[in-house]
Length: 242
Image (tube, rainbow, N blue to C red; front, side):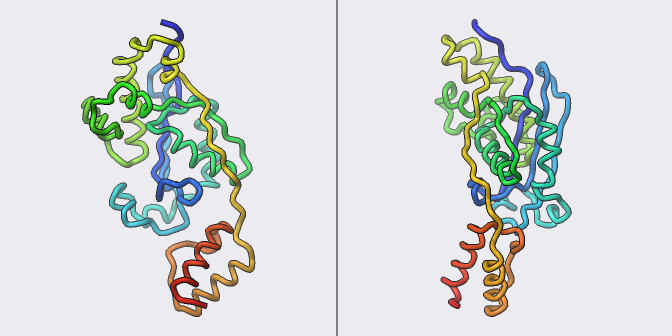
């Protein structure tokens, strides 16, 4: 067998307000550093998204708005997180999802963030086609892995154990270098554009519309990007008029 299994990496998992890194926000980060297949350090934090959580996210994660009030925004947390990640390979279940949110946050702060990753979901999709679902929860049930679902650190810990199970069962079955690449780090590619803050004119218009229509919103106007502010203005105009 060619090559050597990757046994040193950081497993990363995020909880977010939705699935789109262009619009949605990070609310929790869990990261676990592994060296020579042993967990050596963990890092977790809540993240203040600057907006009220959708009800479906509260129901899914069990995270409530009150828990995020005292948390730092992602811009303030990035230096500490990037220091923890170092230049390590990233492991994740659908790792590009987590990477895309972090890349977007880094680009917004004019930081470079390029990493290689290993995706347990891709491995499972190749070798466990008979399963009805290859979600992290379904795979943990399949392998009898203890799992605190939809919480960042719990998902990261479970993903590490899943990677070990998949490696034990399938790594030796890889017959070609190309196939073995599923267990080897690959560049993570996500093209992110930097958000620009809302304009003074947008801010003034939003405050006027909210005052005129006596509206209370669940987001912080000062934290909106130009595109977000534009959508909020359009929504108010479409619903309430000028």
